[in-house]
Image (cartoon, rainbow, N blue to C red; front, top):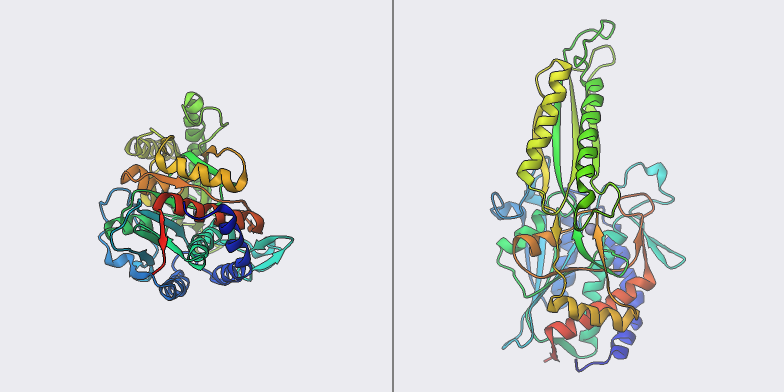
Length: 424
Ligand SMILES: [Zn+2]
């Protein structure tokens, strides 16, 4: 590196107020699923203004079906699922190429009464920027953009090809990340700055999403419904059966090489339910949408077979036909990111230089886009970022001191991994 850590620190610090304003604007977009277009359009303008070659496209333009890592999609229109790839290219690249990825889709805020302030009206309080998506992971997106800005203001640019990718669908399928690969973007390493508390993901769980469409035997509400005849009450039985399946999987996970020491790592979440039409009638239908974690090494097809058998057994107990079972989102493998790669060593140097501690690995019981690049497409991937709270919960916020440090770490990592040359 031809640039000192101190120079990077002061360049990031002197521009940090502008970064926080920029991030506040990014968080003000309600970019829940199906609503990401305006946010992505703003980003594509921001990135083009910085001189990157911007590829803006939608998932409807990409043949996702059957691609490694792609998941089935329902309930959304991919003609509005905008993806943005901003590319920095140099003549005669010298260093190693890099993808910096952030996702801009955010999970729904949930009950508004549980938020101390409106989720899409960001505000800074006591050094934290509050708002849905601030930590997961628009803060990380700002760190990518402003790390590159800091290098540019110091008169430098990456000496190799670099792609800044802002994707959607991270929270439900991973298809945004998959699409960038199908579009031809590859690199020698990938960095995804999720809020990891300045740790790096070593292993993570996958997940499967599925929907049960439970049918009842409709009749007048005053008549007694037979067991299984009441579609909403029957959902309770299916939930209990799937909880028992989850407990059995967790029992078997006690000697898992990566998750054995974590109590009950596999989570079953019946996350959404709707059904019935009329209070005077026994509900004729109920849809139960569920998520179940997947351990590294667990075969997805086998797990789906176990879920199918569990549902069928429960239906038999109720004396009804099994409900229709659809796979409606994530079909994501669990995944281990092998330690010891050159990219991780470069990140370790950058992290140590800024934070001053060794880089600690973490086994995550959630799912990130890391698997798409690393597991399915063989690109060494680093999932590393700063401190956040309230992820997928009310009152989400990102720690601004940590965000500034993360921006510094990324700038140092780019300098190390890609090499730098003077801006022409
Ligand atoms: Zn995330």
